[in-house]
Amino acid sequence: MMGANATGMRAGNQAENSTSDTNLGLYCLAAQDVFKLAEDPANADISIGVSLFEIYGGKLLDLLNERNPVKCLEDRKGKVCFPGLSEHPVNNANELMDIIDAGALNRSTGTTSANADSSRSHAVLQLSLRKDVGRTKNKEFSRLTFIDLAGSERGADTSKACRTTRMEGAEINTSLLALKEVIRALAVGSSLKRIPFR
Image 1 (cartoon, rainbow, N blue to C red):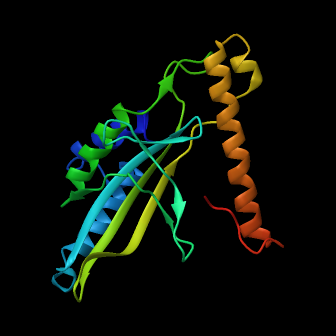
Image 2: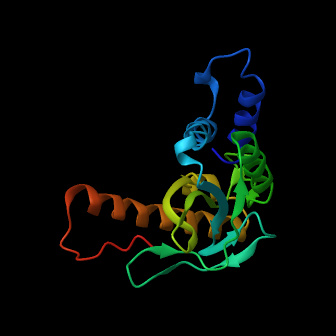
């Protein structure tokens, strides 16, 4: 959704006057809903920030800050946080789509036998909703996270590829398998006291 479809979402935005909302992408529809709620006078104290990073080769890279490295940690309450990740204020859906487009240009892509412009990473878009609470300014009270997964790699598609492409494919498949296990643990219940989301 981030790579090729980011352009599609932009096209959907521009054609909004002549087409129905069903042609818009998920990011655009979600952004419209969020900013529509933010325009309500009752939510005047809410501000919205956006972050965008990729998971490539087991590393986190900030797509909106020159691909600087980001850490993934948990605080003492078990909340996942990302030290080093930049957050950018946005005021409307069009600004958000511009930021998504800019970040998509920095995402790792490559060529495989199955796809000439293949995403080689998972992309994570976060919308942070913040509000003034007492003396604490801009405290986050909600976060929307959208994840664009790289497609799984078949061995047949990478057999003639270079070593780097094969290693990327193996890393993608390993991470997708880990995600599957987390989802399975959530769906069927698990004896684990703590599911390792991170």
